[in-house]
Image 1: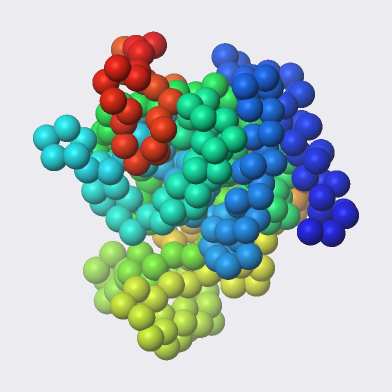
Image 2 (image 1 turned 90 degrees about the vertical axis):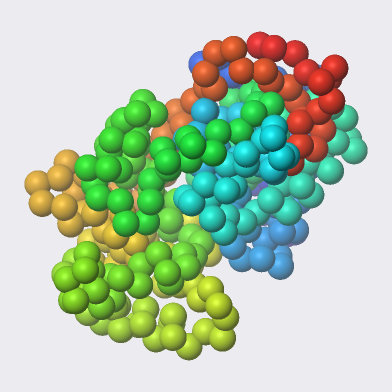
Length: 333
């Protein structure tokens, strides 16, 4: 890395370890037990981005999908154990979710340096921040000290917003998590990078809501571009960029796309095109002012990252993010 990038990385690491705490979590949490944590995670995420331009989007999606089910507890990472763990990865909203291999690499690196100290839930939180930063987005302090749940909640994945969700449904699901309309619009801005499978928006091209016609809130030129993108890929699961202009950069282009009727998913475009919606003005503001978007995105990410598991759930610091520790290794919070 060049010196400007390295200087910025050092700033991020300092902020992560030295800034004031938020709520009951604290950026001081690993200051003595794993002070090198920010550098360890930065190195692995940066390496992942060199070979996978979707790595950043994968990591932040894992964090989002984790926090919306029983709070930010790493439960999304647990794999099936017959009769014991019914993995959240089996829930329809998590079908095809990726990035577990990157998390495993981060965890292995951290365990080598700081064995048994850093939770998988905290790894998801800090890797999301670093992913945004390395993609051109804002810096923020990551409050840490989360524990990993010993259970998964497949049923709870129904709390996750879907690609065809209406604004009413989106607002309800966010409200259930204590997040308001501003949080909804800001956190949706993570769709400024990454891709979506064509199956999640193909109905908008020709048969929206079983009408036999395209989605009227989808720009016709963009619709034809999407049709071409999805038809020409030689793969069983073709994908399209959320942002066709700067697909790997974290910026405000997502909101400019919504104003131009070029939101990829129905759930994206609903934020701008739903009549008399309070979210429309928020979209316009972020489309005009990237600084305002970055500032609110940071606030909303910290707010989401503070979502706590229900009381009484057994927790631990997992040694393997995919599996719970032996019974003797955990304690009940």
